[in-house]
Image (cartoon, rainbow, N blue to C red; front, side, top):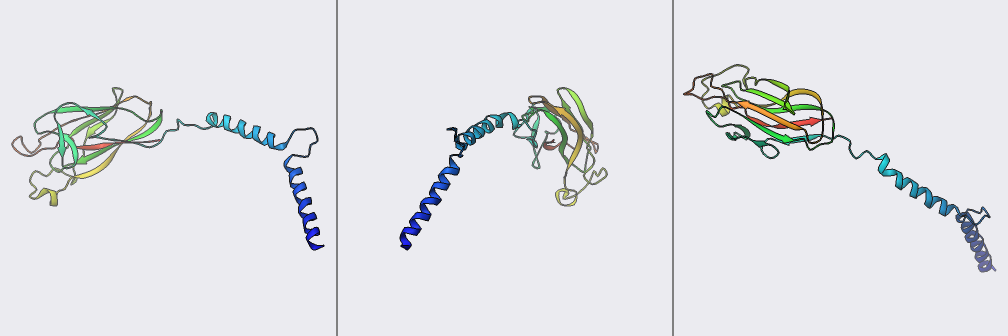
Amino acid sequence: MLRQTLFFICALTCVGILSSCSGGSGDGTSSGSEGASSASEVASQEPAATEDSQPTNVYLNAFKDFRCSSGWTNRHGGLGRAPYSGSGSCSAAFPGESGIYNVALKAQLEFDGASPYRVSINGNTIRQGKYPYSQGKLICDCPEHEKNCPDKIIDINAGAHQINKGDTIEFWGSDVYPCGNDSHGAYAIWRGMSFNP
């Protein structure tokens, strides 16, 4: 008797579940098909609603991402001018999505010179000047300078600018010898540029 009662309760429960799944509308349509069509509509709307062109942070490495004129070389881990090579430039096509970005130059400062530099977008200068000294002032004689007067890496803010995908980003720099041409100088050393939306 107990077994028959349990069977009867299970049968009623299954009928109730099937009835609720079919929607119980009595018109031959089911909420299951409505749910499927809603899901299909949502899926077809996703690409339109998803902004796949949202700007994200971009970093361009001086060594890897830029094409440079002759005279650039590795100097203490940064890209700098070879001694007595004068000025030169490096350029790259902007790979990020179009948008407004805060631009920063990752510069490597030296103790014995303040190199002139310029950052431009499509030939339009957005920041130029001279690097600060790594020690806050010009020092022409610094024995064991890597220990006593080390280079300093800083970000130089170049401001917020509209940059479009494919725009030409350019860095220009020159070597200088304020302590005399027979001595050491500064070589416009840099590491790269960051672009933050």
